[in-house]
Image (cartoon, rainbow, N blue to C red; front, side, top):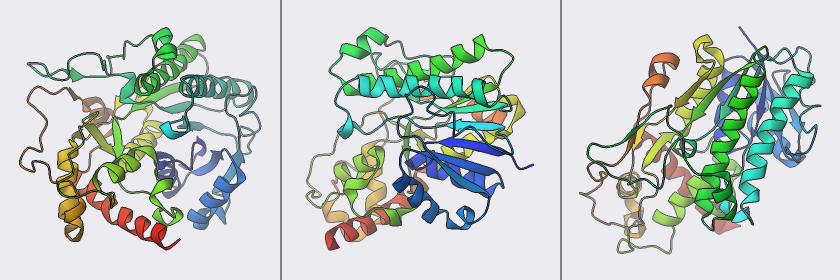
Length: 355
């Protein structure tokens, strides 16, 4: 059955894949973006749907302002599902910790309040959170036996610490925790309204939905830019040092997007968090996979120690058992995730060199 859906952050790396899954499933989607230019780009990417009544757009320049989503939520037929993905994750554009915390938390609470005011027809909100809201990053990375994170775990970082820390990672992690906490608190305080399902992915890698919209690597989203700059930049060589692995858990962007569709459509998903994790993935293994996909460029991909691609024994893990059993979610291999991205990065780089 086709549903009317509001999707925020629709032009993002994950958002575009989510939009594609909902449209392909036959749902009617209003995509919320921050500017007309972003709406125009999405209309071009999804021209097949934009030319029909299945896809339309709403511009919300500042999702933290009072009433930001009120007009976006006006629809006939009315909305039944809302998927909220919008949140900052581009460190180069962040000047203070408030730039993480305020948009994530206020943007979430604003859309919750707007749904209550304007769209009583909404039955479910699917929220994009993060494993950053789950993991205790101050805990040892390796233990014996290995720590296995589940939906019962929460990042213990306090709001006060997040505001004063000089560590941008810590501020970002806290923003995800407190945005998600705000959503759960709101739903608990309004038991007669919509219910909530939350998706908690770790590092999200994989192909861009529409690589043609990027004219140079400088325009890449954060996680994709990290791979390009650390492992494929033309300034590198096979002898360049292998960068340390940060968070070693990953998921393919297409799997986390599908998780959002399943979380909206599966009745039993209401009231649950879902870790969506494809497994462990070190930078060494990513380099190995890039070299296998792009043999002609192996001379500029750090070689490191190819035979040591797995994480050390006891490195923490995450269980996606709930996503598998309740949502029926399965996961792509790292070979598919990195291999499908690799040629896109080369094409984008070539366009940048010509511009």
